[in-house]
Image 1: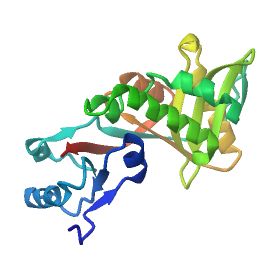
Image 2: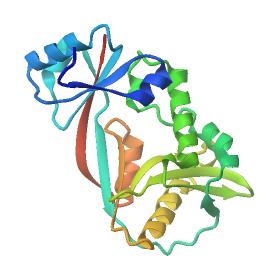
Image 3: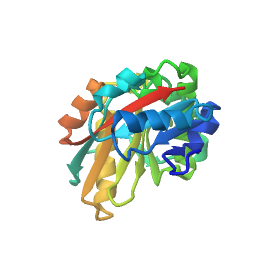
Image 4: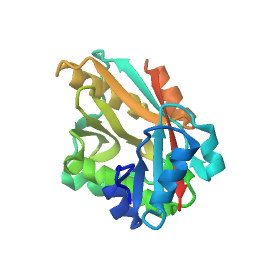
Length: 232
């Protein structure tokens, strides 16, 4: 029995993937502790997540899958005077089906796609659900760029203490037209007017195009988080 609550159940993931999923509370990183947690988890969980600010090398010996490292970038918010040739507005419910369509196959660097125990089409569905939930209130705002009433891209923002980008997506047809840059600049102006000073965005260490994109826009790496999955 998990009397010390060493594992917390991930309700959303459990419901979505239809298997019991939990997160290991990292009270310490000894092999003995991990063995103890795994013993508690068997027959109760199908998959466990573990998040750590340090790499834990021995976990792979214990059959943990090392996922792509999550990295967080940050930049000081500055006002942009760039001319905008597209219409940018907040997303509405009627946009959801178009945004879901754009989101397909955009997030293949994520830990869910790289862990082959998760079904790829279920991963597609995960991000489509994320986009939909963002429009329905999970995010504080979702901005879309459109041209002739066709949506070219979107960005979701969680404002909290430090505003953080949840998802950014650009349609295949609009790649190379600086739609992503436009969204970031528009978002910065929106946040600047609300007196926010800093903007953060997470991505994966394996997602080189995203890393290059953020660096070009003045983002700096501030944090790494190591993520592991353990199937039981």
